[in-house]
Image (tube, rainbow, N blue to C red; front, top):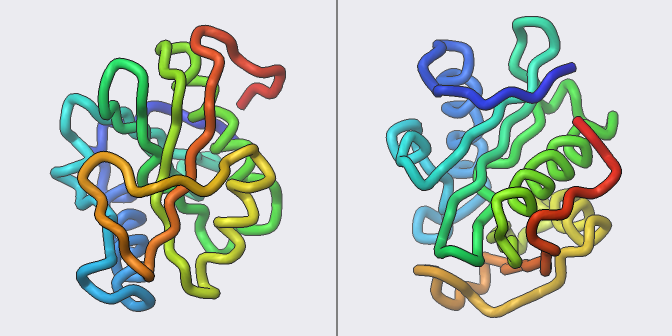
Amino acid sequence: MEIIVDDLTGPEIAEFLAAHVAELQSVSPPESTHALDLDALRRPEITFWSMRDGGTVVGCGALKELDADHAELKSMRIAPAHQNRGLASRLLVHITEAAQQRGFSRLSLETGSFDFFAPARHLYAKHGFTPCEPFADYRPDPNSVFLTKQLQPGRAGSARA
């Protein structure tokens, strides 16, 4: 299993992200679906990683720079067939460490409030994320949960991907 910076040009990552967006659109109202499409993920303020088992994409996640101190976790997904194996924790640690190494002091995210998103909320809580107010361009939304974590810039934890 490896985690690599992905340039988002391969058909396998395009297919994986299309499944991610379709799944989110199937469980969230359109006004509450904040998944980024392929073009939005290619913006210069975003770094995108894919998690691969051989040539197969099994997970992904992105880091979006909001300002010099604050970044957002975007597009976290583990393929359904690979869930409950610790891969999401591994990917989250990898992205959190990258944020710390880049000097961010805060990492935030938006996820859904529905039962479908309960495993994600549990994962984030386990890794020290706590509820916060909407950030960046988000607005209060009963379908969204906003979470944040304070980081120690420049310091990575002990877990490695």
